[in-house]
Image (cartoon, rainbow, N blue to C red; front, side, top):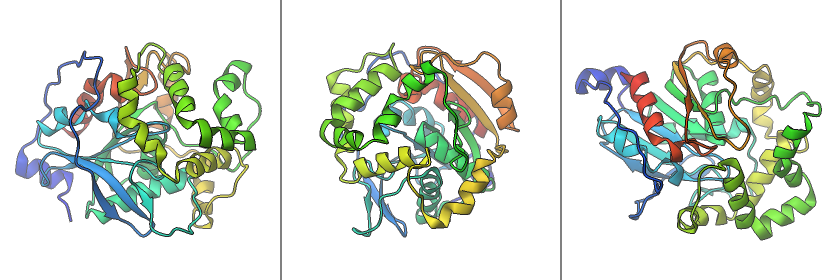
Length: 328
């Protein structure tokens, strides 16, 4: 099995590295990146790897509707400090595939988190640090709740992200309901057809509205576009947004886990919360009380100026710096 954080620090003497702010507006990879795969009981998970194989592992996990390109500015800053960086394509994205052609394409929050643990198991990794946003952050939050002995540190882009999928929620204020139009759309049959036929138009619109201060070029989008042509992408997205609104059943094996998560348990692992100052979902709250109540070992809470929803792409320096700080 891979070395634990204690073993890694003892053998390598890793300390926090200073990170210079990244100011480039084109943080996406220009050169081809080798894509590796590993098999779990359910998936063949595609992933990208950077740094020494003996380094302590850090997982970087993307969300909807993005892919590993969101983290292109992060690995080099961590590899320089001796860490092993692993960036998986979550189910329904890129080259990741189901092993069973007949398996239902489900994507409730618990299964995305289980995929992360299965990924670590398949690679022989006992402990890891992680950062993610959107679905990726949610998966890490849940992994940290269920397996606090394995997630040694978390940089939560967006804060606490665990959902109550058991209790029906009431209507939200009109402004918030309007921001969530895509979720209601995906809960309709028209939305299924729309995502299948117009996925790239929808995704570009979400990128632009969720990060209104960040101009995504056609070239930026082209580097990720193939990830959304995964044959399972539509089914995975539709199931995720229907399950969270109680309009689709989840996997039986996760019923008890979802009941536990509905209580929105506190996360105990060392954590730093990063919130985007220019998110299309509105400015982050200035009061840290909400994050402090959900992370019992919160080391810091920072507002990422210049960042939209796709925070790691806009402020990779802050993501890397937070990970180094937690692992020092």
